[in-house]
Length: 335
Image (cartoon, rainbow, N blue to C red; front, top):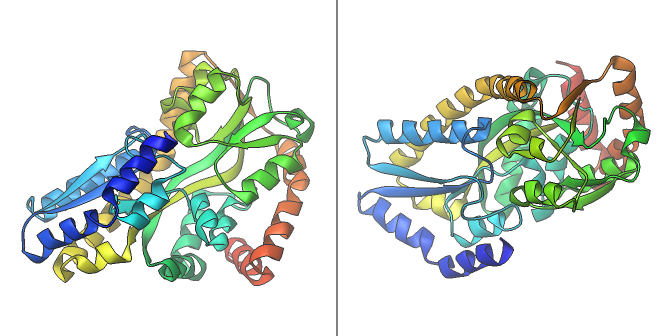
C-alpha cells in the first residue's frame, strides 16, 4: 500500500490543484477529490456520502465530489502527503494524524478517559478550544473545515481486556499517535503502528494480537473474524477533521466555497447524529453473529484502567504546554 500510494502522489505533484482551479475560474465543472480510509457503511463514510449528495444538489451538478473510501487511493501513511502535494483536494483524517505532521495539540483528543459522552466532545470541539485548534492548521497552509464524530473506542483481542494486567504482553495495533502509544505501554502492551487498511490482515496473520476501534469500524472491517473478544472500554474517542489545502481552497470562487461550506455543515451535523446509531447497529449485528464475545466493564474496572493511564495526560502536558491541557480539562469539566 505504501509504494502504490507514493506513486500516486508523485504522479500528481504540482498538477492536480491547478487543473481543478482552472475549471473553477472558467466557470466550468469543479471536481473535488476526497479520499478516506474507512468503509462506506461507517459514520464517516455515510457522512461524506451525504456531503457529496448535498454538493451535487446545491450546485445543480456544477460541483462534483469524487469519493475514494476504504484506502482506495491512499492509506494512513500517505494521505496527508497526498493532500500537501495536491493529489487530492480534501481529506477526513483522524485527529491523531495531525500530531505527526506538526500539530501535537490535536493529540489532546487521543487522551485516555478524557470524555464521558459524545455531547461533551461535540461542545468542546465547537467551543473555543476546538475552534482554536482548527485555526492552528493555517501554519501549514491547511484549512480546517469542521469535526466529524465516530464515537468511542473499545479494545479487542483474543481474551477479555478488563484490567491493566490483561493487556500485559499484547501487541496492539494503533494508528500513529504518541499519546496512544504511551497509553498502551502504560497498560503493559506493546503498541504496533499499522495503517487502518492493513489491520484486519495483520490480525488474521497474528502480526498483532489486538486493536482499538469504535464498533462500526470493528464490524465493517471484519475484525470479528479474527478477534474472539471485544471489551467495551470506551477508553478513548475517535473523531476526524475535514481539511483542505489552502491552495485548493483559494482557487475556488467565493460562491463555490460558500456552497461547499454549507453542504459540509449540513453533512457534519447529520453525520454527528448518526454515529451512535451506526455503532449501536454494528454492536447488534456483532451480537447476532455470535462470532465475538462482548464484555461490559463496571465502574471499578474503568477506574482501574483510568488510574493506570493517568501519566499519559501528564506527559502530553510537558510536550505541548500545560495550558492546553488545563484548558481542555476545563472545557470538559464545565459541560
